[in-house]
Image 1 (cartoon, helix red, strand yellow):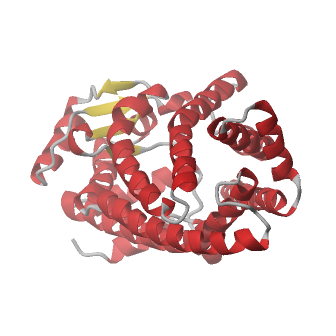
Image 2 (cartoon, rainbow, N blue to C red):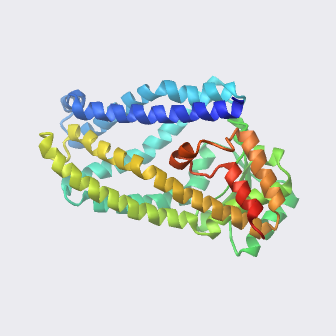
Image 3 (tube, rainbow, N blue to C red):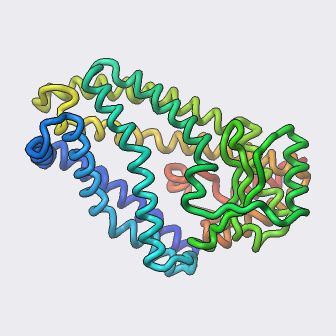
Length: 364
């Protein structure tokens, strides 16, 4: 087995194990006294429902992180170094992960408190309000991520390559797309992998190219890679994903609430916002998430094919785009021909082989 297959098999095995660990942990919380013990400890520290809730979820989150840490560390540090993909030393890895954890807490804890407030005060209709909040938050996040969140992790600089800048500008003008700027970012500080994107919505739209992409690809190849990202925007995939997410979240929360209220009685819980009952709610949501994952990925792969076609149609350069896909696969150690079942369930992008086969058949 070559190193690409070994690398991807290891990554997939770790992903599956992490899913199993998370699911097993939630099942333990539901069917053992652990959740009630954590609840009792939280209320021994404070009688305030909201502070107790924070202590409860932070304790569960901490335990879950400890359970996942060995696999997470192996996957993101050991394995990446083993296959010569990472540029991080241990201290850098710790700093980046701590920063990511801190930002996640800042973002997610207010939403968690809103969820608990709604569950406590509107036990029948909390899911309606929460769906609206998640929807509005997803729009806000898409807007602020390029200018506020991404720069916390990478240094962004205006693109210096004037020839490439003019090519990208011309492509955007051709499709009547306005943006706030073209930037390169130092992805090489963490990895040798390459990436590009057309990020943000409204006035925060910007083109971002990793330094690894700029260093290893020709201008024409970079243009086609960006054209693919532009295709996602032009085909309104971001907006479609937001609204599909709205509908999906609405239905999942609605069904979850119905099941949760029924099971509360069977599990002898007193009220929906009882802290030790919350793992039951999380279990139902986790099961729905796993069930829907393949269907979300089917839609995502469809969008990728559409963006591929846009890239070729807008640049009239199929060869450069195919060359870029092959380079990306080589640099990122992507499996060009994964197991069909694994691809169907877990892959948000079609395999490189399938993408190239479609491009070769497509007449511009």
